[in-house]
Length: 89
Image (cartoon, rainbow, N blue to C red; front, top):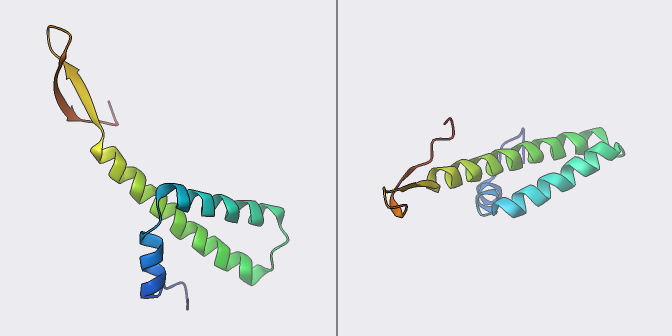
């Protein structure tokens, strides 16, 4: 990786991560950086990786949010239809 840019392989590997995998890697980076015993250059690389992992988690959460639907009940109390989730409601 040069100057914060990802190679095609690195970008593909990041895109292939599940939410849980990306979050686990991000948590490991945060723990290592919080300990404070990582050299400066390595800290910068880890921070950049962490930022990309955070963006991946955000992307996956937004995609999941779009799939979530609210179930609306009919007069008889049974599920009548579903509507997209409005996170602001």
